[in-house]
Length: 116
Length: 111
Image (cartoon, rainbow over all chains, first blue to last red; front, top):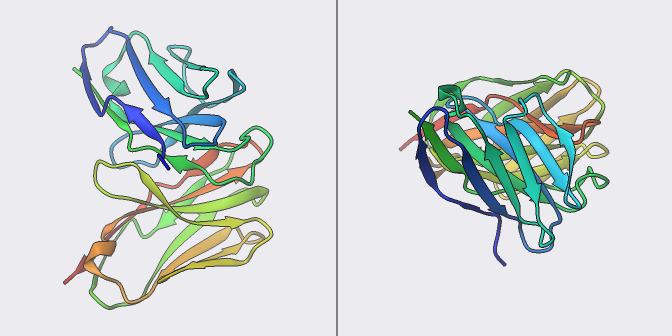
């Protein structure tokens, strides 16, 4: 049973560029959440997708956007990259995240983004 | 706004010692609390999930307790091993449905 997968593993971009990160949820899961983890910090919630809609959003600017596909996989897009966007981006999946708040979240290995 | 604090920020112990990691949160209206392990540069591995109606959960050498009314949780690791060396993160899921994390406790178990 495949867990949560993310691609790419590492990415180096230049300030002002745009980036797309991808996530496939654990088999049977329908809800995907994205988190940003700066070095030495705990992960910060970016947004959550369920039924192809953004259901909840953390304190992140509109430069961060996302999408969920019919097969439940998801993309995170970041426009106009800043040096401060350098971080580990984590994807988490769960069941019915919007309604099933008691369900356990499973995390992927993350994508390390470096902005130079 | 939910805030999660983990103490200590770093801990170094000799192999075989029993240890306790602490987590506190400001809003007791939570659905559940999860403890995670994170190895350097890696993703998060879920260790234990405690629902708001539960007092504790156990998995092998790990035991996590939850006192929702006081906003506290502890992770107890018995007979620590060098392989337990990692950062341990506590996260709560509240009415906002998202996970709010602490900054973690970096654990080093010395052989």
